[in-house]
Image (cartoon, rainbow, N blue to C red):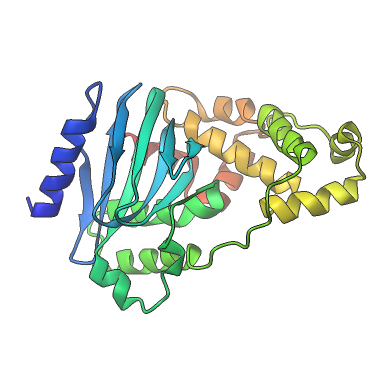
Length: 278
């Protein structure tokens, strides 16, 4: 076990409460390594920092992470960019969490010559658009006989996805936040756009424009992302039939779930579930 791996394992053992599984190394070379980390229900991790820059995706469960007086709630297909030495603390939900973490050697990031500027600050994103390339890297690493070339190709996609930081749009107005909250509550059977607009007292075209400005997509695409994330969370259970997952998360049927999930994450729900339960 190399020194960095030993440090990570010892840190995990001294900060977990209650007991959680040690991280499992999925792939590793001199430039980057990937971990599959399992956190116990209710586990907390006191304020700490990591010596390397990392990128992590939540595969199942939920957690809160706090850094720089900001607290983010994350669940399935949430992704975090975490620069080296950024202090943060974590609290995991009643189901614990399972996460894929990729850490990058400092020399590797330096060799990218500015192409990794998106890794320069702590930030979270949510949904399949950001999670898909990380999940694809996980898949490439899990394939029998995977070669470094395949992993490198997948890693390039990950870096390109996080290369540009989105322009800040400021805080959304309260009425727009109410619309987003309603979509989170009712994504399985969301209201029509006209209803959403009427209920907050704006025109539906104005709602569409402001929603895209602040959240980067249409309300329809946002609902689709919420459904995919809910399906990913449901796939953590090996017993729930896919047709039940589909109907419970707002899809018309199992085939609709499979098409949409694969388009968002790059793999079928069945393949995602199989990787979850390896």
